[in-house]
Amino acid sequence: MTKTKILIIDDEEDIRESLSDILNDEGYEVVLAENAMKAKEIKDKIRFDLILLDIWMPDCDGISLLKQWAKEKVISCPVIMMSGHGTIDTAIEATRIGAFGFLEKPISLQKLLKTISLALKKSIHIKKLDISFISDVENPIIKILREKLKNLKKENLILISGKEGNFLNICIDFLLGNNFTIYDPINRLDLNLVNRIQGKGKSALLIKCLSDLSSYDSSEVRGVIKLLTSKKIKVIIIDNNINSLQTLVGNDWIFENHFFKIPIDNDMDMISEFAKLILNYYLSKNINIGYKEFDTSALNLMRLNSNFLQIDILDQFIVGLIQNINVETIMADDLNITESKAGSKNLISQEKTSEVVSELYNLGLREAREQFEKNYFKFHIKSKISMTDLAKKSGVERTHLYRKLKQLKINTK
Image 1 (cartoon, rainbow, N blue to C red):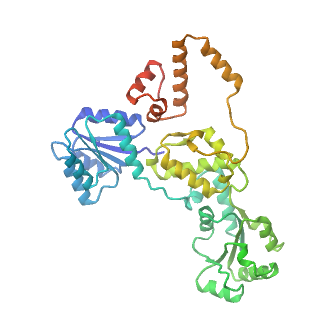
Image 2 (image 1 turned 90 degrees about the vertical axis):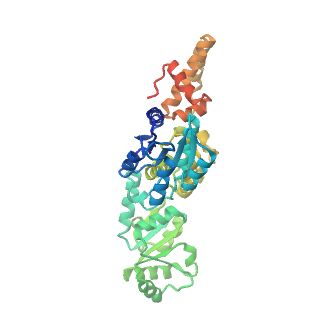
């Protein structure tokens, strides 16, 4: 995945290099500029996700540069101002022009990373799943789904089992685009309906619920379906009840060729697969979200929650996680959900746990503490947690954390 690009503009080389080292360690792609002229030259060639801009520079100060960009309407990302001699008036002026925030030098590591994180989050606008989730995602599950929908496009009758919602809508969008009219129960199912559909220049009729056809018996519905399809008008009928759909059309059509079931339906094992797919989809659409992945414990917990059998609910839940969880590896504890269906959990065997504990008990207190710390940090680093998140989780201040890891001879790369 493409890294978040940050431009650092500062005339002091030590500050540029120091900030660059920190942000590179955090996984950002950093570009440096020593003055306003160089910054403008670089910015014309590269699209940045965030800019750190020093106020006091010899050739052109940061406020003047920000004003110029604002006047030219070329500020397309958050800008954070920096200064060692800032005043409240300067900070207010920068914010008025369009700066996201103001950092006073010397900049503390925590303040720097927190401000950058907030600025990038502010620029994230997560859009709900759209047709590209079906048409563009190259994953075996989505490929099968896409192929099924492509085959259905050839049919004159399409029966869909699933709840109304965004995912159902994007499936319909893939099948028909906007080339359909929605059935209104006040209209009769007759030749006038055919003329009305064709008069609108549409080639399909969408019946959103079987209850809309409650005043007709099955033979009448089948007769109208035949009439519509004979006039080159596709018919799509949606309902949650598979048996009702099958009873409605009878044996006049080969049922399997016309039927589509919205995933995940009743297969709870598919919840974890779709959770990963949806998360990766949003990450690919917005690099400012940063890297995230689900730990196995989180996937198992979601898989045991029957609410997530509805893709729209699972989708909304994952969007909430992206917006509110700062960690890279999302654990079960981060989900704040309970199981809605009984199931087993992946637990470390008691036997293995006892062995580890016994080994520690046989060591002296200092050695046992050091061994535990080593295992603790190795475990979290292996899960690809960022240094910022590890500092929060362990309660060790960020600058001391590197020293601690070095003492324990733990490689962070």
